[in-house]
Amino acid sequence: MPTMPQKVYIETVGCQMNVLDSELVIGALRKRGYDLTDSPADADVLLFNTCSVREHAEDKTYSALGRVRPIKRDNPDAVIGVLGCMAQKDQDAIRKRAPFVDMIVGTGQLGAVPDLVDKVRATREPQLAVSLGRTDGGRNEVEASFVSYDPARDPSMRPTPFQAFVRIQIGCDKFCTYCVVPSTRGPEQSRPPEHIWNEVRQLVDQGCKEVTLLGQTVNSYVYESGDTRTRLSDLIAGMHDVAGLERIKFVTNYPKDMTDDLLDAVRELPKVVKYLHVPVQSGCDEVLKRMKRNYTAAYYMEMLARCRELVPGVSVSSDFIVGFCGETEESFQKSMDLVRAARFKNSFIFKYSERAGTKAADRYPDDVPEDVKKRRNNDLLTVQNENSRIDHRAQVGKVVEVLVEGPSRREQRASRDREAPGHVTQLTGRSMADHIVVFDGTERLVGHTVRIAVTDASPFTLYGNVLTDEIVGVEATDREPSREPSTSSTNHDAGPRPDRFSLPLV
Ligand code: 5AD
Ligand code: SF4
Image (cartoon, rainbow, N blue to C red; front, side, top):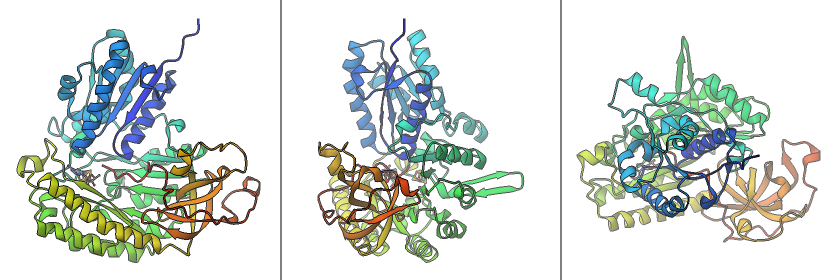
């Protein structure tokens, strides 16, 4: 008698690394015959891929687990798994707060998920697989306990079939005092370039046009083998000419490792997106010192100037933490000054969240009150938003190349019939400088690069018209029939679809 395929449900919190990890876990389970479901109540296996970078992210997972409790009660055979950063860091807390969890699997052990599911089924015993802590052994031992996990890719898990993340590095060795990542993701280890190039070729064979190279400090990538030293710039050069690959992005950059060879590669190689995410975190030297970021505000501004000099037209975005331990009003004003002067395309601003086990939690009291953190967050955002508006307005009148990702958020909400061929809908994609662009076109443009004349801008979105008959890099037969440029694509409340690609990375 044929058995019904088992169903797996997954929820992912956190950065692009987690999105990629979830793709890989699902890819591996599909190979074992599982189908994906978006209904937790129908699932045989329920997985929660977690983030520990801020308390809020952990709260999200605990409340998701709370919602699972009745499902497990109705279906005691369901296997519940907690994966990723919280699993690595908080095994005991998870078991206490959610004793019905069957499986706790750290970031460095995700390859074991399918076997662990089988083991839970066979034994009904909880399964735990985590890597060594940073002080639980010698460097080599700890490194080896975090397995780089990049086998089965699963195109159906990707936000779009033509965009994919590729991990080039795991872990982090920077030990910023506020950050839990060096513990949850282990020592920094770069993957061999051949593995990465092969993976990129395989993705392109599957129809992928854009790869985003992932690392916590991606520009620290270096792989040494014999006499050969491969830097990020060499790695990119080595994949640049893969036929069919159109765009190469990389996140997240560490300011001290922004070397000229990389900036030269970004300028010279046409497929490399002219966009750099380089978190500054604070504009105050004392705060940066307590954060152990290893640079001053002046150093950061010089680096920024160098980026703009070596890569004309480059967009830069940043992360800030407000309300870090000991941040006075005066030190906060230095972050305000920096954000004013830096003219970032956009910034992600976070309220400091104390993380147990970090140096900051050990050394410095979390002494900025929550309401002050909130106010500083809003103040910084107000200045950044004004700069985002200026940055986006400066694009009006230009022609930008956009890789079309799909319907805009407005269209996703609307229940219109989008099946009819030639139906004009509102689409969204990104320019080569990472601006979100919204415009009217048919769904046949999705997955293609088109030229868009930018006619309007809001602080976060460009609006424009497809230049007739201007699909870049495809055969004429694939082209949308010519039509007059639309004049109705300046709907300011349209907004892009949920942004799955510009979440900051740690
Ligand atoms: N509290 C608040 N924000 C944090 N980040 C990292 N750790 C913390 C923390 N403990 C922020 C940094 C990083 C981004 C991804 O998250 O700005 O760049
Ligand atoms: Fe590493 Fe980034 Fe965390 Fe610093 S903030 S420790 S560079 S992951």
